[in-house]
Amino acid sequence: MALHCPVNFDAANLRRQIESMYTRVVEQPDGEFHFHRGERYAIDLLGYSAAELEKVPELSKSCFAGVGNPLLIDILLPGDVVLDHACGAGMDLLLAARKVGPSGYAIGVDMTPAMRTRAVMASQLAGLSHRVDIRDGVYEELPVEDASVDVVISNGVLNLAPDKSRVFREIARVLKPGGRLLLADVVVQRELRNEVRQNPDLWAACVGGALQEAEFFELARSAGFTHARISHRFNCFRGTSAERKVSRDLFLHSLNFFARKGAVC
Image (cartoon, rainbow, N blue to C red):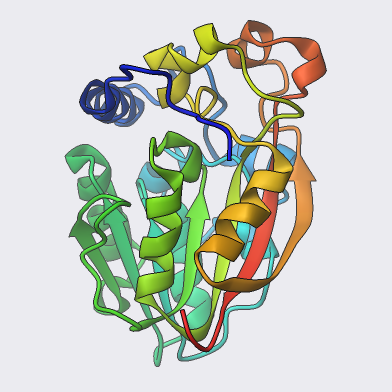
């Protein structure tokens, strides 16, 4: 697999940049960013259901900054335990919590305190706090027990991780055998230039760490997943400054990706 972190890449600084940027999303959801946000974006570019989003509190929807729609990939079943992998302010998490019903459970993990606070408040306002659990954590070390989750949903997170293989292994660890990964993330047509890879602002904006399509399949296979497939594609950066900062022939966009954990992983 191609090296996605340049030599001497400062991963600790990247984490600080990510936390700072997404704290600012909470504080200034209508501010200037390299990426789209909010309910209208989710409906118009990512195919979210307007009717379903009516039941999600505005303080969660306004901070939504996902790049795809993992809930389109497969059906969540009543009773499923779902983990939202870096849940942000909780829009996907609350939609999932409704889908799994009163016998199900939805866990949200996020490293940004401001986002976690929003997610907790939103779950209370939505009347779902009894089946939603928000935890402090990072994608390399999820605060979740082994083989305890039926479905992991992830929206625009993998690209932020310097060690993507470790993130896939951690997702596999928490999934039950046969469990499903419903992942949306950024994709490029070819390898990004080094100056883009070195730019922490573009990493934090979900661009600098973007993969090519074949690499999703390689990561999934290496972590013990099967049945990998791409289900949808989205032009999630249309009209943004991020789109203008990379070559047009890269076609910066996003995809929905499905994989299933094997019986032995």
